[in-house]
Image (cartoon, rainbow, N blue to C red):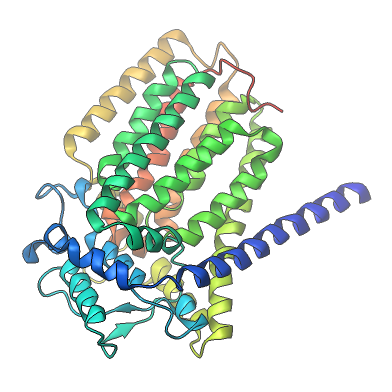
Length: 426
């Protein structure tokens, strides 16, 4: 008993050291990238003016009119670009408060970014701005250097190329580990996420990259390393993401991990799910809170209070024009997907269920425990909708991608891809 307590305490200290190290590393990286001169960045934004200026009547609209499934969230992307253009004039405070310039968006959200770039180029320093210190804005570690060397259009093209390459690499690894059924579930996952729209959106790309890297890590590293993967994925999503669809970074990889280890013991799987979920949440909340503490300590602003108020609002705040209920959150997010896609998914699920019943797959093979475990994780979609109901109802065009956990889980449970190698068992 004493030995077991000692091992748990040792592991807890190890995880705490990982978190604290990541907070320090994240802080240093942010300070470094804020030192990159913004003159070239502004030039590249102005150079892309023709591609960036959007329709003033569709300032936060969709690629295809009326289809919310194709909304790249240009508004938040403009905030990211605006934040990237800011130079560390105030030293350490700038990288902790992450100001972006508020020049209005009467002519479209990207118009504000172009005007900001022109203002900076003209040497004007006195213009409206507001701080956004409760997030890490870790995406700047990538976006700032890219903006220094490339214009907006080139970065979008690079993002599309990288997303295709990483997605294909993941598919290749999955194909080597599982039978053909893994391709069906993976394609369904991609249908929900819509990688094309993600590839043209800085805002949506952050969670997608962390998701792919987490899944690749599970396929590459042995099981004894998985606890580190889950805590690091929680830390990473807190570092680079705003509040898009972060729980997918936990839910989908957990399902992949369950079918990788093929454990049919439900209680054993339940323990596995709880441990890794706790580690992810510890990494996610811990990394996020680390920014609040640093920003509050090194600046005159109380970011801790600001962040806590924001968390309270996102979890229980008034949604103003929309009824606050789990049913409404589910309906609004599901409505973001085109009806024909939802119908096709339902038909495919019915066919998969019928085949499972006819072949008695799972009952005959003694894998009920594994299927139940996968179904438990798939319910994370509704846990998220309930926990951050305000955010879900106010931003369904972002939150609908959390449906990927449930849908991916259900199809994985029904089809249950079988491993073709022993990877992931050690």
